Length: 119
Image 1 (cartoon, rainbow, N blue to C red):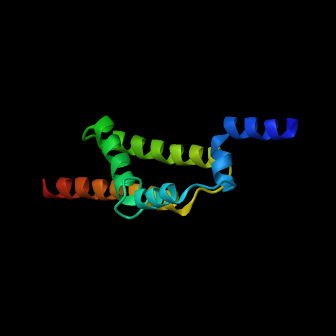
Image 2 (tube, rainbow, N blue to C red):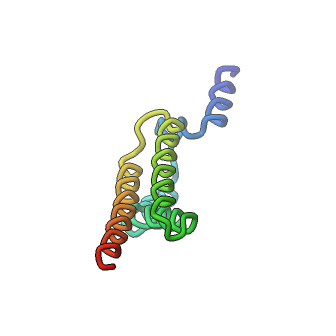
């Protein structure tokens, strides 16, 4: 009984490692909703999540390229911290989201270079 309580306490205090373990079950409706939410067009899918990350960076940086580079570095730092919290390599959707977010930053920098060349 004590070891069961200790396991439960550990899971409650380290939720991310518990989730990463995959040692749990969910009902069919929850699983279906989660799959919808992380699908290509889902709210937590790569496209929408990377766009939200980029839009947040833009809101904080304004139209300042140097600040955007700081924001991109902050996104990278956040993904590294998330990996540490997860306790192992993040699921592929996270890597795909990180890559998609970096592409949005790269496209932004390219558009700024084009504007500079035109002027």
